Image 1 (spheres, rainbow, N blue to C red):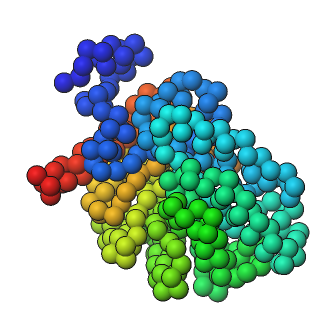
Image 2 (tube, rainbow, N blue to C red):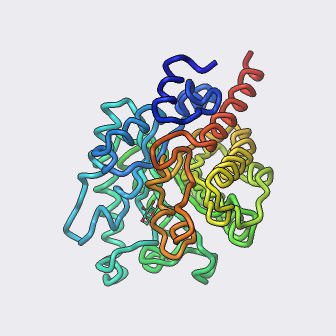
Image 3 (cartoon, protein in one colour):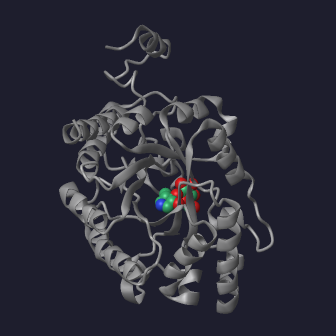
Length: 364
Ligand code: 9MR
């Protein structure tokens, strides 16, 4: 039953809420399923009361979207811009939310000043950066994406590694070096290796999956402190999919004692039908199909979407993407431009409820 209050709230903005969705927030649904639900956030959300309200109500965890990325944090070697990340961490503490730090080390989006340095200088900056940033937030974060997207076979490096300054200065050793360094200054945070594409069953997904699994094996064999694998899960209906196979793949990490985070969840709707209702239905159906498989894996501990409202999705800013072209703006997330629930939210809740029911059966 939809409560009178929720019904009136829905009526006030003129939308019919999907059954159940008005009462259970995603945070509540996740807690029942033994999971954390959250979303990436920009510090600008704190100047946007309606959006902030959605974060406060629907999430248990904030992920620093861009605030802790190297190029945002350090526009020049001696200029540090900690304000946005500090704001997110302080707000989360005040509101009782958890925070995921994204991301310390990524070979993409390196600023020009870094690329100009010699290999020795790059190594010095690497160590100094990790020490300074990880110690500033030591004790304040649930998890750190220590390394983001280590593989990108299209860069044509031996071993399929993503190219960039860290890789070219240190080779594959940069990964283990980063994990050990963060552990030394923040021994409690969950150290995460975050990767893209593994959810798709096309060439990219199939090439990256074994590379990631091999890296995890080598890190574990070397005794490196790795606690979790982040699977970004930007679902792309243009690629083949086999989510049951994806679930088996991630269960393999679980069997090695690792937690699994569905870390950047959203659905690329650029190849879906134009009519918004049809697109919303297709986005919801794909999100549900994926989560029903993924959440059946017990090692999955959290789901975080990449932003919460379509209005602030990264797909809106992609040049050349059909979603950003004249035809229609992207609708990849559980809430629309006016922060109203979409069918995707109901699909996420449904998958959470299924996992909660499975849990109840296991522990009567
Ligand atoms: O959402 C992020 C966008 O605002 C940035 O411009 C972009 C480049 O820094 O990164 C986006 O987030 C990416 C994330 O860091 C890693 N996985 C893919 C995400 C979407 O591109």
